[in-house]
Image 1 (spheres, helix red, strand yellow):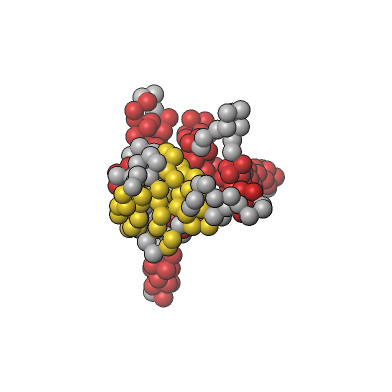
Image 2 (image 1 turned 90 degrees about the horizontal axis):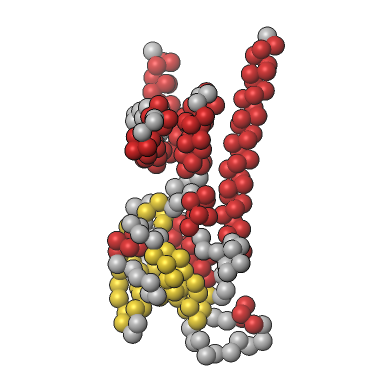
Amino acid sequence: MKTVASFFLALLAGGVSAEELPDLAPLSSGNFEKRQASQKAVNDWVISNHEVAKEVLLKKYLQTDNPEVRVRLIPLLERSYFKPKGYVGIIMSPELKDPNAKPPGQGLQAREYHGVLITKVFPETPAELSGLKYEDVILKIDDWEVRGGSDLTSKVASQIQKNPPQTPIALQVKRGNKMISIELKLGILPTPSERVRDMPRTSFGVRSSSTFEVFEQMKEFRNWLDREIDKERKNLIADRRL
């Protein structure tokens, strides 16, 4: 009786979800729409069951011999590997407080920026749904003023991503000569691989240097998965030697 009670206490403490992982077989269906629907269903499950998703999906990945299922599980594993963070759905650049002001001797690094200029709004994101537009300037996020140096966009991203998805935030925005207030609920930050695909390129077709952190996250995930695959291979070899 004591063992049973301990088991249920462990379940409660660990926050194990009661939701069952959707069937993975449709991931290899010959019908494209069924494959896409299956991938979305598993992705939704990962988001709702993030605390257990990585372990469950990794086990399924290592156990399956179906190459199509394996390929489609990789982005789902990446989703499960990273903690869900808040997301607005824009690309931005620092906005100069005074574009005509000359920096006091250290070039761009010395300039003071006040606000971030929206250079792209992604479709079907909290940004678009809330009414944010191209060339809007975000001046305030809740009570936090958007100002600083050349690293301002990174600070804004950190300010947003410290919140979990579905967190409501209020933005003070300059649109032309008008000041407006916009409220939205944060979405879920795309995985590093998804973010790299959406990042703008330079005129030479090279990714901006600001993508370094995202590439490092991609590398971290792949190294983790490679280590897990290697451990599984070693375990199989050990089993055959018994």
